[in-house]
Length: 71
Image 1 (cartoon, helix red, strand yellow):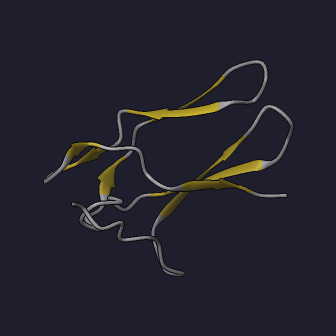
Image 2 (cartoon, helix red, strand yellow):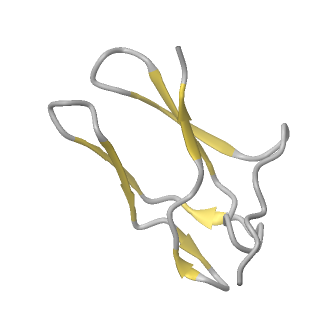
């Protein structure tokens, strides 16, 4: 069973604007091993549902990083 690493205050992050003007903050660390990720895409539909794809860890392959939406 893989343990979720989680993110820390100093974790590298990318910030994107969502369809309602808020920010989507993506933490560029692998949720499995903690390595840095190659930046992928943040996709949104018209209902502002978010899907992350193409985020690559050199050890674990494609993963979905942790992210949050700011208020």
